[in-house]
Image (cartoon, rainbow, N blue to C red; front, side):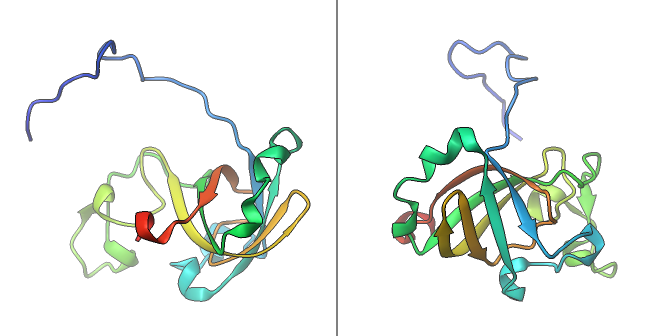
Amino acid sequence: MGKSSKGPGLGTRAMDKFSIKPVGYVRSDVRERALAPRQGRDASLRARIEILPPYRDALEGIGQWAKLLVVCWMHLADRHTLTAHPRGDATAPLTGVFATRSPARPNPLSVYTVDLIAVRGDVLEVMGMDAVDGTPVLDVRPHIHRLDD
């Protein structure tokens, strides 16, 4: 690997700790991590994203989009895992989690591309999400084909 450099004005440890707050929570029929399908988009699962009251105004205009990107914190994931068998296949070689879709990783963020089915007040009804009920949502943004595909 090449030499790393720090960004302008950043100390070497400036970003060790920071806080991030959920803007909402996933509500789904998936109640346990073990019951979640490998890829929600493949399973066509429906879910609801309930946006918290302080962030309701951020939903203005969201209904014009057919697809959304949803960033979640996989709160049930193992944060100490650095290698995994891709897609849980024990016959596949161990691979670094940065090269897999494993939810187990140092910072267990997930990014979903979901179909927006409906907006009902502060609730987004979506399809294509395998998150466990109660998963914190960190961000929602439109999926823009020319930028995100």
